[in-house]
Image 1 (spheres, rainbow, N blue to C red):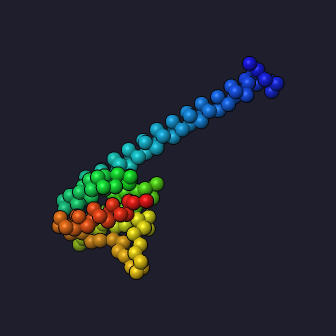
Image 2: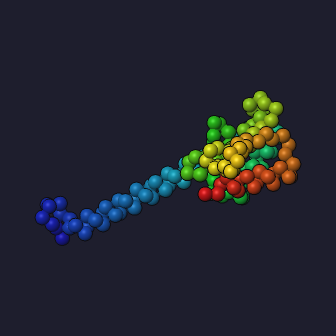
Image 3: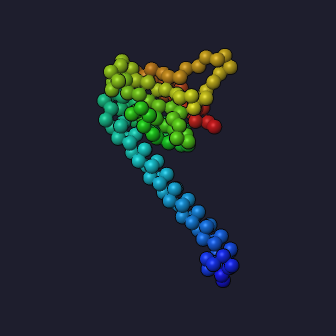
Length: 149
């Protein structure tokens, strides 16, 4: 069927072509997004692997903990260190103390964590030196709350 515009396609055919074009663009965007997420996750794992003993084990444990309790957060490098983001914005992160030449590593929270408390005073980072199981339980709770929408 043709129409009076001279294009040779009817309004229905043009609408179907536009819809198919939108589908193809959406598929390409999803593939690009998935590739980017996979690359960012691989970058985080590679960074953790380069960390010195002690820091590497803490970073590995935090990485596994975030994957378990906050699967909605995506691994992403944050100032060259492991971070975990929602919507592209880092919520929690780890900094290697040894790589920074400091005496402790840091587990931190960005403003995206929104863990505000009513008295107006709350921590945004924690020093880590060989955390106990009780400390890891606290970190798990913090990650879970920070990742909540």
